[in-house]
Amino acid sequence: MSVDKIKEMVTRISEMLVDKPGMVVVKEEMRDRTHIVVLSVDKDDVGKVIGRNGQTAKALRALVNAAATRMGEKVLLEIR
Image 1 (cartoon, one colour):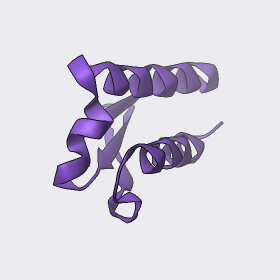
Image 2 (tube, rainbow, N blue to C red; image 1 turned 30 degrees about the vertical axis):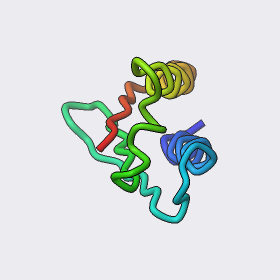
Image 3 (cartoon, rainbow, N blue to C red; image 1 turned 90 degrees about the horizontal axis):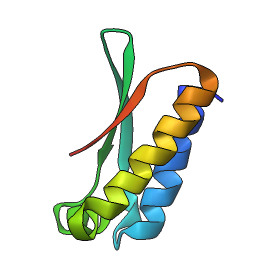
């Protein structure tokens, strides 16, 4: 699995969570040998992606971490 597959996974899951799926944007940045997957959604949908007490964001980050560990990379999810 590559970082592109992780980005695709985050995109698909996020599109199912929000009211405006066309506004979901997932980009990749690099910082110190770490891939940063940046998720941007409409300002009205940020709460849906974060979830109550951050539970949805924690679950998304756990999925990203599991996939990254499997491919031997360090990938973090950042929500903007």
